[in-house]
Length: 270
Ligand SMILES: NC(=O)C1=CN([C@@H]2O[C@H](COP(=O)(O)OP(=O)(O)OC[C@H]3O[C@@H](n4cnc5c(N)ncnc54)[C@H](OP(=O)(O)O)[C@@H]3O)[C@@H](O)[C@H]2O)C=CC1
Ligand SMILES: O=C(O)[C@@H]1CCC=N1
Image 1 (cartoon, rainbow, N blue to C red):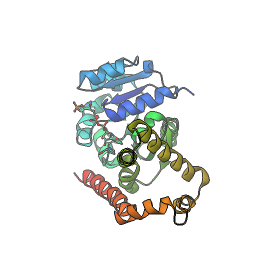
Image 2: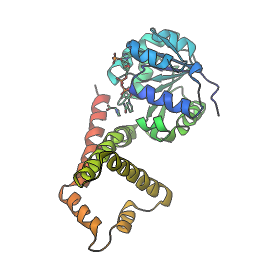
Image 3: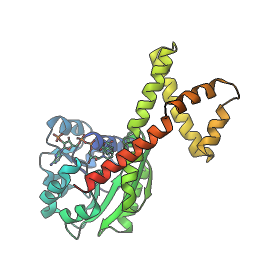
Image 4: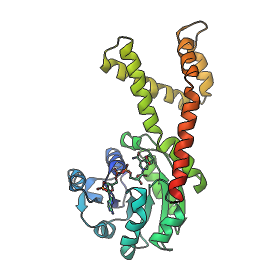
C-alpha cells in the first residue's frame, strides 16, 4: 500500500539508492514524493530520473519531506543534522542509517524534540530482501516505530533491538552482503576451475545461496541438520566440507562479523 508521506534522502549514495529503488519497486512511494540532496550532481540526476526532486540544499529536502533518511557517511552526520536543525519540525521522523552513530549523538545534533529512529539496513532492500534492525530515540514513539516498520517490511525484514546490539547487527547483516557476494564469487570461480562456463557457474552459485537461505528460513531447521541432509556418507559433499574446515571457513566468518562489529563500536566512540 502506498505511503501517505513524503520521503527525503539527505545523502543520495549507494544505500539511499538501494532504499529508494526498493521502495519504489514495491509501490510504497512514487518518485514524485521523494526528495534528495547530495553534493554530487550525478547522484542528484539519478534521483531526478525517477521523477523525484533533487535539491542542492539539505534544508530544502527537510522543508519538503516528512520522513528524513540520514544516508551520509557516519563522519558527516553530526554536521548535517546541525545544519538542518533550524528547519526540523515535529512532523519529521528522522531515520538514520549511519553505522555507529548513536541515538544520543543524533538527538544531540537534531535537538531534544527530534523523533529519531536508528536503523541498520543492508543493500538487499534493493530487491525487497533487506535484513534490518532498529531502535528508537529522542521523542520517537510507537507511531514512528510503526512507520519505519512499514517502510522496511515493504523491502524485507526489520527487528526492534536494544541499541547496544546494533553494532553486532552492523557486523552481521549490515556488512554481511559483502561476505556473501565474496562467497558467490568464490563458488563461481570454483565452478569455472572445474570447467563450467562463467555465466552458468555464477547463476548456479547465486541460486544455491538463495535456495539454501530459503530452506533455513522456511523449514526452521538448524543449519547443521540441513547440511547433514546434503552430506552423503563417503560422498562428494563431505570431501568439500573437509576442505572448508581445513581452511577455517567457520572461524573466518565469525572473525569477519566480530571485526566489523568492533569497527562499528569504534565508529560510535569517535
Ligand atoms: N552501503 C551499505 O551497504 C550500507 C551503508 N549504511 C550506512 O549508510 C550511510 C551511507 O552509506 P553509503 O550509501 O554506502 O555511502 P555513499 O558514500 O555511497 O553515500 C553517501 C552520500 O552522501 C553524500 N554527502 C556527503 N556529505 C553530504 C552532505 N553534507 N549532505 C548531503 N549529502 C552528503 C556523499 O557525497 P560525496 O561522496 O561527494 O561525499 C555521498 O554521495 C553510511 O552512514 C553507512 O554507514 C548502512 C547500512 C548498509
Ligand atoms: O561498510 C560500512 O561501513 C557500511 C555499514 C554497513 C555496511 N556498509
